[in-house]
Amino acid sequence: MNLDLILFLVFVFLIFLFYLRHKERFEIQDKVFALYKTTWGLTWMERLAKKHPRFLSFLSSLGIIIGFIGMIAMTFILIKATFDLIFVPGAPPALAPVLPGVKIAPGLPTLSFLHWIISIVIIAVIHEFSHGVIARLNNIKIKSSGFAFLGPIPAAFVEPDEKQMEKKSRKAQLGVLAAGSFSNILLGLIVIGIMVVISPFTTNLLDYNGVNVADLVDNGPLSLAGVSIGENIINVDGKEINNINELSAVLSEKNPGDKISLMTDKGSYDIILSDNEGKAYLGTSLSVDEVVYSERALDKYGKTSLDFIFWFSQLLFWLWVINIGVGLFNLLPLGPIDGGKMLFVGLTKFVSKENAMRAWKTVSFFLLLLLIINLLPWFIKLFNFIF
Image (tube, rainbow, N blue to C red; front, side, top):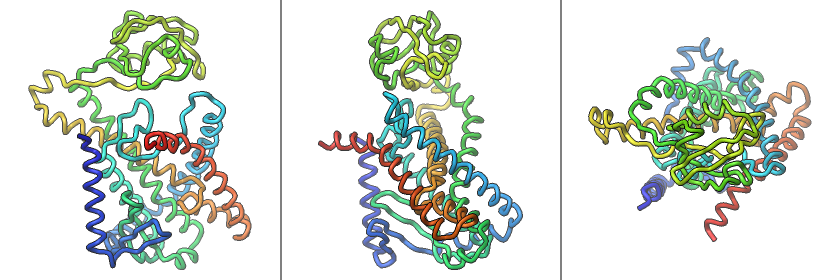
C-alpha cells in the first residue's frame, strides 16, 4: 500500500469538492491557475506594517540587497550547472521537481506527501504574506489575497494594486518584490538554527548502521571496484564507519590516488580514490543507512514518540531545503517571477522602459532555455516511467 499516493488522491478529491462547492469564488487565469480570492490576512498585514515600520523598512532594504545578490548567484549557478550537465559526465541537473515521491537528489530522503503539503503551505503563506506587509508599509493597497491551485499543486497569492505600485519609487517596488524570497530564505536559516540546536538530542536517540551507497558515478572508484548501489559501507582501512561524518573524517586524511580497503555489508573491495576538486573522492552520493532507535531511547520515550520526533525532524529538514530552494529560485531574473520583475524595475534606472523590456525578454528567454535543459532529465525519467 502506497500511503503517499492514497493521501495525494484524497487531497486532490477534497480540493475538487471544495472547488465545486465554491466554484463562483474561483477565478481562472491563463487557463491553468485557479485563484480563490478572499480578504484573509489583510488586517494582519495592515497591523504589522503600521506597528513596526522602522524595522520592516530595514528588512525591506536588506531584502533588496539579498535579492540582487541572489539573482546574480542563481544565474551563475544555473549557467555553470548547465555547462556541467552538457559537458561533464555524470553531472546532476541543477533543478529537481519538488514533488512527493520524487527523490530530489542522491543521498536525500524521499519527500513524503505530508512533509510536502505542510512545507508548501507554510512557504507559500509566508512568501505572499511578506509581499503584502511590505506593500502596506509603502501604502500600496492590497486588493485581495487567497489560495491558488496549479492543478493539485497549492500556492498562495497577494494581489496589490498594480497602478499604485507603478507610481511608487523603485526602492518601494523592489522592496515589495524582494520580500517573498527574502522571507523564505530567512525562515530557512531560522529552521537550520533550530535543527542545529536539536541535532545533539535526536542523534543520541539513534544507533547508526553505516553509510549507504545511494548512487554511483560511471567509471568512478566504487563503480570500477564492483560496489553496487544499496551496499552499506561499514569499515575503511580497519576503521569502523557508523555515519557519514566518520566516513568524511577518514576520507579527509586521504589524497586522490590513494588506495584504501573498503568493507561493506556485501564484501570487501580495494579502492583507488579519484580526484574531485583536489579532494579524495569515492564516486558516489552517500546517505545514512537505515537507522534504529537505541534501546535506551525506546525505554524512555517509546516507539510512537520517537516516530513523531523523527517525523518532525524530517519536516524541519524539508522546510529549510524547500524554503531556501523556493526563495532562491524566485530570484532568478526570469519572466513573471519576483526576480524577473526586480530585473525590469532595476533596469529602468539606467535605460528606458522599452530597452529594459527588450533586455528582460532576452534574459528571460535565455534562462528559460537553461531551465528546460536542466529539467530534461526529469522529463525523460517521467517518460520512461509512464511507457
